[in-house]
Length: 165
Image (cartoon, rainbow, N blue to C red; front, side, top):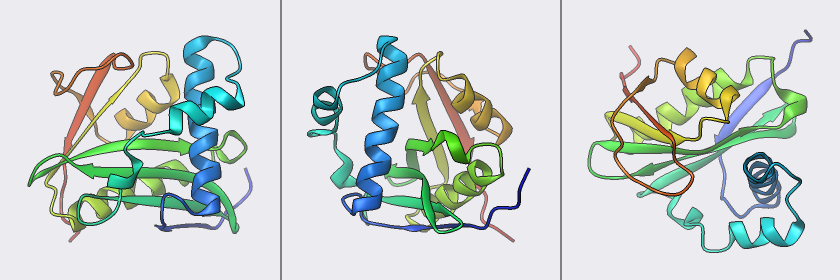
């Protein structure tokens, strides 16, 4: 494993790097769901009116992670109520997986949620996204009862957030 210098910072969801990462995220999750490569038109359709504009303060935050300066990861937090934030659009490009960036991204997303006033983080995902589920479990998330419903939700996780000491 090579050493990678990660930086993770807030960035507008519609910057060129954030947009490319969101496209890669949607391509990955849609292709897995459909068990075939997603088309560019399907990716465009999936990203249309997906609510990403809410990932700006005070309702949320979008983060972009760079590995040695290259856009490599993204994720967002969305405030659901005064104390609860939802983790969303967590993605690490395949070429950058396995070098510690995912844990750093999760830490940064939790810090962003705390900064928005959240005390608890929740998320939903699919059973076929095994890498994501393993990441959430490693980061202290535990299965919880469903807090929302939708066609692409199989399992829900939650975690109490702690202010860094």
